[in-house]
Image 1 (cartoon, rainbow over the protein chains, first blue to last red):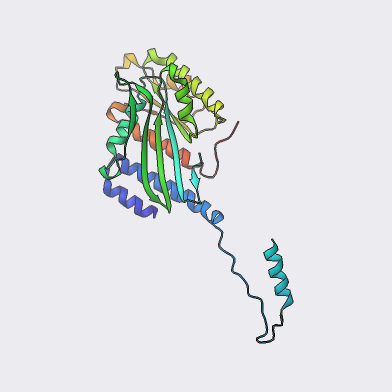
Image 2: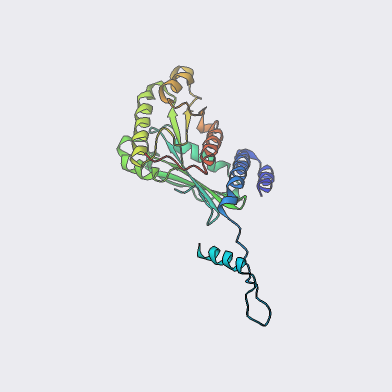
Amino acid sequence: MAKEKEQQAEEEGGEFAEFLADVSKEIAQRVESLDPQATPKAVEKKKTPIVAGTGVIVEWPNVADRMIEEMR
Amino acid sequence: MSVVNYGTREITCKIVYYGPGRSGKTTNLQHVYSQLPEERKGKMVSLATETDRTLFFDFLPLDLGTISGFATRFQLYTVPGQVYYAATRKLVLQGVDGVVFVADSQSRQLAENIESLQDLHANLADEGLDPRTIPLVMQYNKRDLPAGEISAIDDLDETLNFRGVPHYPAAAISGKGVFETLRSISTLVLSRLSAPATKV
């Protein structure tokens, strides 16, 4: 995106264009270094393993992990 | 003012041009406006008196489009330089992210420059901002006037630039030094994206 802006700035020409290119470069450096913390990826929900047709939960350690996770 | 908002994916920077009356603050904004491509030209709001002196303030919104996924806007303001518009200057400084101090290079204006700089520091402190750390750039304007009428850059720097911030000679009337100054303050403001201005 920043490169597109730089290219666009070159096309526009002039003092404003140079300014826009510099600002774009600066923002690209800054936001890329900050962005990952600001937008954490969603945690994939685990499914509780149940034996088909019986309704019996077979992996208690996994279920406990999930309960703890959801209580946080 | 929040400079970067990850929620709305917006970056907004408020830059205020400060300085004594007739030092060239409005002229700076007029040059920036004159250089904008037609499709980017919004409205420059300028409230001037009959004698062309800024009555309230000038406001120039710069919509830079989407950069790295962020809608980016710069808002450039000037303050009225005349001593009796103190309340307006305070109002314009609210939520400021960076300041350009436009000094008049004329030797006879040195006292006005000092007074305005002191006024800036007092108003920043009133806003809860630390005058020692807020992004600041000095512009020594009117360098196009005869040498006998203006102070040397070194003298101005020694008197006004106690923080040792970047300084630029300018002749805003012809556009010289205007974008160098704007680029410098923008870089300083953006370099603080992760570090808001210190509250005092």
